[in-house]
Image (cartoon, rainbow, N blue to C red; front, side, top):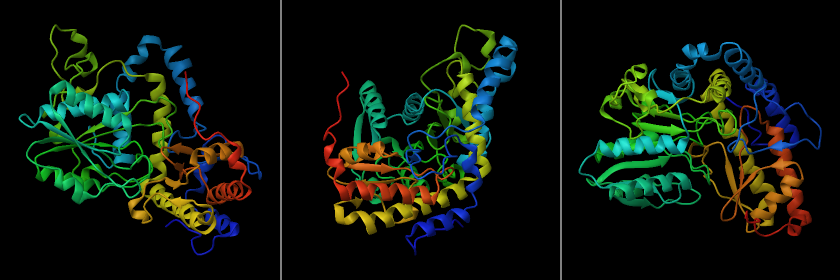
Length: 427
């Protein structure tokens, strides 16, 4: 169990929780965490971009200097298996999946497109795609694009902006016309957590497949894809998996579905006999058929480091600390910030919350800028959300306490009012 200073909101209680934290040792394995001064940077945006692991530069340098610099093309004998090998690490250590069900490849958007089209093809005669109206924009855009190309209809399910998707509302949208449902496990705006097993059961009863976007959950909350009976999933590796900016994504395909599906981008890495250079495309066996082109070898070296650290820490332990950290955010917001017009815009039940919390305030954009100038890094989400993501592997309870104290000061002294009310437009 992870400690929580919930009965005592003092800074001393936060320090005590850190002293008892079983994951405390992992903090030193990330850069930028050795400053303990009162003015140190407080990074609460790990749900957008994870910190750099200390081991990553050496791993990338090894791939550059030894594998590429010395091994040259001979290193392909090892590189060619990276996508599956790291995929198996993700499956076993992070996603609760079986070997041969996860592949590291492409970007989240491309992987979503591949699996969505493959799933829609596997449900002929059905002409509706379902997604959440408050889901991450790219997911909704990809769904709309596929529907437009295929003459299908998009059925957007409404979700509460703070509490997330109601399974009963989703169930009412499922019928014999629905081919595929696309949903996020963790809502990007509020952190609301969806029950993967329950939604999968609802969709399966209607004859539909589900493609899960795990981007805001992978490495921070348990997915347990096999136990949940999940069909398909995609996700990124640059958030809680700490793979670095632009790191390649991953896709998951349940073993029993693999040979039934054919993805739409026919590249030579997904070909059955890749080096035969044959005239016609024939998909490879298993999850390899969902590969497309040459993998980003150097980026994969960084991804592997992040995945190994996450697997070593254990997703269940990470998730437990995440619930405790976000719980402290909620408690401090109630105790300190409510009088200044701030309210919690995330589920209060920790079992229904991912590893970030949103706070709402009419001047959230100004507060975001004021915090950044005071050494706290959160992020902003429209229309009025200040989002705080205390990544459990390297964020301490005292970091959360100090960040919230700085936010309290900004609100109390009114300094946030000097900041622009709108973002500058990029031209």
